[in-house]
Length: 467
Ligand SMILES: *Cc1c(COP(=O)(O)O)cnc(C)c1O
Image 1 (cartoon, rainbow, N blue to C red):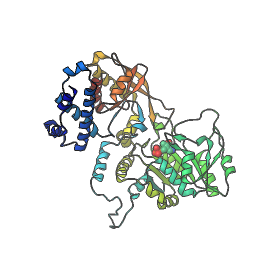
Image 2 (cartoon, rainbow, N blue to C red; image 1 turned 120 degrees about the vertical axis):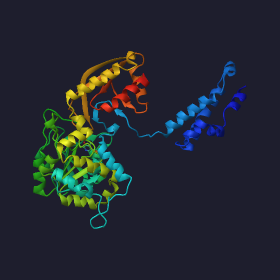
Image 3 (cartoon, rainbow, N blue to C red; image 1 turned 135 degrees about the vertical axis):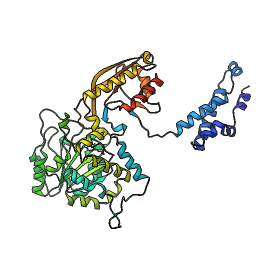
């Protein structure tokens, strides 16, 4: 009996010549379809093998059903692994979800640059070889007041390059209060080790004085490093040395002063009601020799490590062989130039860059958005399957920036009546455009700060599918 069933299974060649399979094979590579066919046939064989005596009689091999399954699996296999998601978590600079978003206008410049030849390393004036670092150097200098600039892969590599170039294996003095670990694997002592510099820790966790830096100075001192403790704050009985005083000390002894400011905003967000964070300009004005920051945190651009400062140091870095290993691709430059150009007009940057727009979104705007989304849920076909309400809450800046900042926000709270919250949120990660939500006890929360209005209909439809 079972042998008969096995014989009824369609042959691979027959499946390939089925009109539906022939149709998808115009788009999906045959080797992926072939893998899917094998998977489906193997699983069908297993089912037949395990059939009990009485079930065998009623079992039929449904060819059309197998074909549908093959199409489903093949389509899934050919989907991009890296894909768009909807960030309903309210964490604006979400490192796991790609940090900052590039505005459409600039995305077009990336496509234009990437799909055509470009003058990446070609000087159009004299027809000679140019340098990719010229693409944004003048712009960065204009915006920050620095003498020179260099862009590398990310801020972690920027710090490594700076230390490797300026200290040449000598000692770098750092306050114990700044021995930070930033998301995953950026830890100051480790970065220091890779760079070849020797770490000299001074002061205590909560207090470091200028005299600590002075006392640690030796013939072997290569640099003073200040690290912005982006993702945590020490409160209470604390003191840090003012960067201006540290810069003066550096100048007096001819020791370069380096500052890793992490997020590196070009806008003073305290003017928009957020926590005061040091801006890039303040750092340069304080006399720091070399400053580094991320391109995709508060700046709101592509992943990059931006290094600015004294020309003599930047020139040394450009000549370092390590720079070649950390170099930035043309698509990043296309994005970064577009983003930096927006900053020539602060208001335009705030209006156009999604990260800045979300961070400075007014409570009123959030309220209006919440009402719109709430009515969409109320008017949906599955309204009876959920309890839905608008509640107050807080969003986070994310990306290790402004850890104490709580941005007052509006949330849509959804309580599924028939399925569990965990089941629903896990299914929401499997739909076409996955939705990443927050959970609060028995409720699914959607933060209106990180969800755009043009995403509402997708969200409504996908919730329907899942519920
Ligand atoms: C985020 C951060 C880094 C790492 O930057 P990436 O661009 O993610 O490599 C380094 N230092 C500080 C202080 C940071 O906040």
